Amino acid sequence: MKFLVDTHILLWHLEDSPKQSETVKKELQDSSNQIFISQASIWEMSIKISLGKLKIPVPFEDLLFHLERSAWAILPIQNKDILRLLDLPYHHSDPFDRIIAAQCLNQDLTLITKDSIFEHYGVAMLKS
Image 1 (cartoon, rainbow, N blue to C red):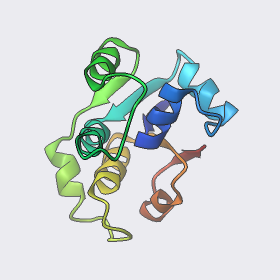
Image 2 (image 1 turned 30 degrees about the vertical axis):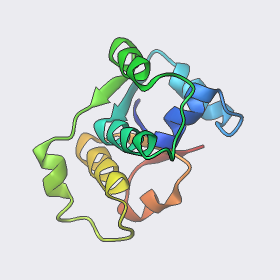
Image 3 (image 1 turned 135 degrees about the vertical axis):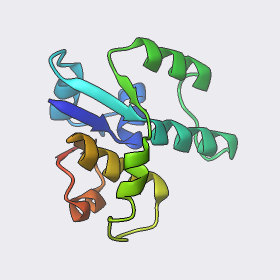
Image 4 (image 1 turned 30 degrees about the horizontal axis):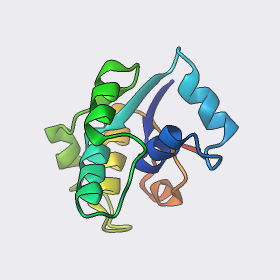
């Protein structure tokens, strides 16, 4: 399967948080799955870290290096994702969630998340 990991799932994964379900852990470790992290999530984290609203267990530069070298792929934001935003209903105004929804819909990805707002966009989900 092809999964896109929501930002909080990446953070829980880094912390080995008990909030992450066993099902999600299993899917993230399954080498037959393709795992993506949106460039939007990385952007969101950098903003929150710079504002002092987020702390992560590793230096941000190390996280980027690890992601670039891991089996997880960074999913760039493409023009078609931005264009898809024009058709998405405004269920909420979080720009990062909206672009993640657009990426899932455009790339036929299943989103790993705890956030039920994505159901309103018709995104395939694996809830944690």
